[in-house]
Image (tube, rainbow, N blue to C red; front, top):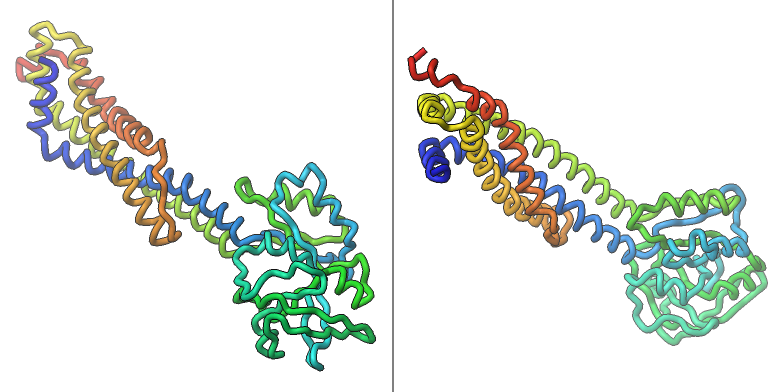
Length: 366
């Protein structure tokens, strides 16, 4: 009986109910889209940070060099678990074939791990007397894989064999990469570094690592890299806030729509409700009818909102972040909970008022 009354009521106000369902669906979809973007895209940004390699740069704060012995700080157990790796550098200008060239002394094994996106024609150096030439350096000096090159600095000279040529699209293409100890020996700068690249896990942010290094490594300035990836993360946060605020505004409007639908239904059916009360129906039964109508509108709207939210999240993920968005397990529960909550809260005053009507007054036409 109650079910027949419920469906009959929804059929009579079908157009208003459809508007309310669509309003709730739109608001819920924006919230669901924000939930999916937060879970999926944030994980992809963390993965992108790892793929790009180093995300922190340590440089001298005042003097020209860092002390190589301070690298032990990066092996401290308080920070080591947060690090993927690190690689020290010494940059000096030396002469090759009478031309000034930037020479980068580094750990060639470590940099291979930290820079997986580097494109190397040939192979990575495996011996200390092998070097990796940047593409522009190789072009300027006419270097090929297997060539020998003599590096001169002051009165010192060292010869290296070109193992590979690297393309990065950046400043690395203008440098010749050699073993760190070899360059320190060549330049007479043992135990000194120009900078250290550090790759820190970014899932929970870089701040804990930055604070630790600034506190423990005296004389070093810690800078964050990967401004593009960090800008994308900031964009994601702003987009989530925007979607949430718009979603809340739409949900407020949908709440007004549900209230108007329920209030109109109550006004149109006041005689029917009064007759039911006169025939012995209890207040809670009258309240159940209106609450069920609101719940039906909210449930359908919330379900549709969950589906639309997943679609919106995919569209935003592909168009803005160029990444697929994996559906969150919270999508459907979130959408339905929002739908039920908005519908029931919006119709609460109507439910209460309908349950307290005075049958005698209504049936007399007063």
